[in-house]
Amino acid sequence: MHNVKTRHNWTYEEVKEIFELPLLELIYQAQTVHRKNFDPRKVQVSSLISIKTGGCPEDCSYCPQAARYQTDIEKNALLDLETVKSMAQKAKDGGASRVCLGAAWREVKDNGDFDNVLEMVKEVTSMNLEVCCTLGMLNEDQANKLKDAGLYAYNHNIDSSEDVYKKIISTRTYDDRLNTIKNVRKAKISVCSGGILGLGEDTTDRIEMLRTLANMSPHPESVPINTLVAVKGTPLEENNEVPIWDWVKAIATARIIMPSSVIRLSAGRIGRNQAEQALCFMAGANSIFSGEKLLTTPNPKENEDINLFQTLGLIPTEPFKGAQIGH
Figure 1: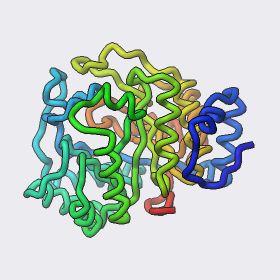
Figure 2 (figure 1 turned 90 degrees about the vertical axis):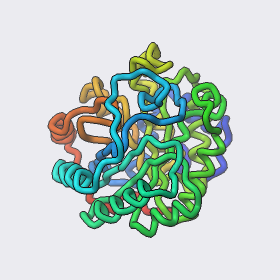
Figure 3 (figure 1 turned 90 degrees about the horizontal axis):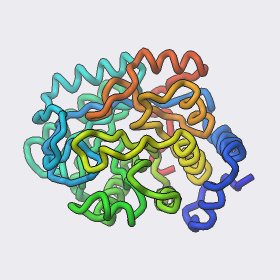
Figure 4 (figure 1 turned 120 degrees about the vertical axis):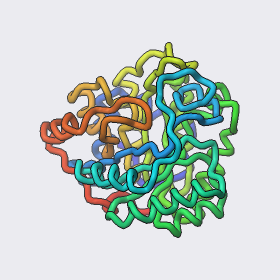
């Protein structure tokens, strides 16, 4: 059994040893670590609101919101405050304890749109919801403004290993990603950072991505493990769906090497049956994105998730009850 002590100095070989355990042994070890750190019945439910959709100048190969790709998504300017409040209330009524506000920006700019986002953060936080934002790159001053507005968490995924990152994105660097995460951390905002399986990476890249996350100090409080939803019109539209076993291995490894982080089942749940999702929870996942849309890709409807929770005996967590900031 691997030591569950939290550490930030994992070597590639150590993570590889865990990742390559026989699958049932890996799940057992991950579940054991999970039960030492969390109530195994409780799952944190998040809902994502796309407050500004499409027209992004970045060239992320997986993303239908990049302006340069011809995809079917409907572009929209920044939503107004009342619409966002109404959507947040609907998410809360559906059992969500966290609402993530996503804008298709390369980086935050100090302008009226950012002022409006700060107002959204204040208002939705006042509804007793954890508010997370994903707005692209941030400087220290902007991170501090979001913190002052009451922001609980900031999402900025590292996507994959540094080697793969260079192949799928040319408009910014891996270090740009890491610097934004540092700015978020300095502002004492909870960090949400994970990656995507299915970008054309190999096992080495998956291990390296998990090692990069686990060697952050402190660990990201929330670690979304996405599987690619291949969208027509993007460069990765022909990529194959990630086998469930690969998803389970990544989740279980993340659970063991980041024992007190919340591991989130994010994009890629649509089409996965209850038994497949149950395996992910057994492997240490304890958060999901719920609702019909994940920014621009489909997600199971709320009633499907209610059925899933009832079948597995899972209970949604209350807001602000998960991993503490900077644990």
